[in-house]
Image (tube, rainbow, N blue to C red; front, side, top):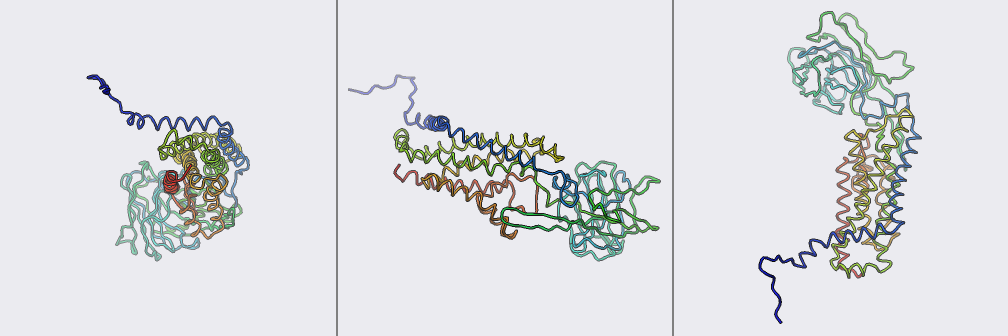
Length: 484
């Protein structure tokens, strides 16, 4: 008997090619069917959402509208400080601000006495400040960030000059007012033509941090600095313009000498309390709102582990391998289903937590994180991706261990213990612990740069993904070599 040959023009489809093309999709569908047809597993997904949202609501209900020390809550919740004292004149278009800093007293090594050009007196306006500091020399700072350009020493008296050209502002310093040294230059996006130029004094708060296992306490005390200026000029300034003061609220209510300036002839004395720059001790409201994920992830971990170990326990894995002998594809299909199911639950949990906690926060006088904000949206979407990766990581550990209780315990210890232990360690050790363990993935929820930040959001998420990739690779190797 001879084999029939395909008629001319009739396409031929290899059964191997068909399996390669259609087999994985069918595997994913089969694994999804297993997941959705077990009622307690679907209830576990819903429980992860409910727990995350419930913790967010409880956290919002327990929030308070003011921070310790009498500071208004908005100051401690937005990630920036815009305090200190600014005495200014209008500066129309391009021009210069010049002054000599003759004396400075109090405020510590980062106390600031110098010049500022800013877009307006409103909080958060674009600015450039050229300041003399007792411990860090002359610095050109902008963008509500630490450090800035410059350095060296700043022996007083010291001449300072800020020159504006369009949106570019350049800073110079001089020991004598004749020979100028360029400190640096910045470009201020959004700087209007009509800006403000003048003298500036500020000092960072004295902050004490107490760390103990399970939590930390941060307490701050406002600090003031006093600076004296002469040979002050703002050019061009409108004829007849008078000096005005911008002193941000938030200083000690009982201070007998509030921030401000005094003038004697051509000499100005400014007193400033608080700083301009990042608030390294600000509360991260978004991350706090999403804290419930620490509880909700337990349900995700349990689901992903049981999704695998249940087949080992009941011997169903042999049937699965008989239907699909390519074990690596089986593991990949399980990982896809577990990851996507956890991702979907994470999206519902994260969006639900932020949206439902918002009205509760506002009712307590707290700013609610808007989902339209880029950092908040990244934290919400990152939280969902975090749960998806945690599910795949849990599934891989379950394949390696092949027992439910040990696998769940291992995963939760790796994700939770570093965060608890870190609060009782010195800050340098805590940072390394949170960088090098799978718990680094929770950094994706950060929206504020704080003093204890161990790793960036996406870098931390990458660490978790790396652990997951290694675990999944080991699981695939063992999956092929072990008996079912």
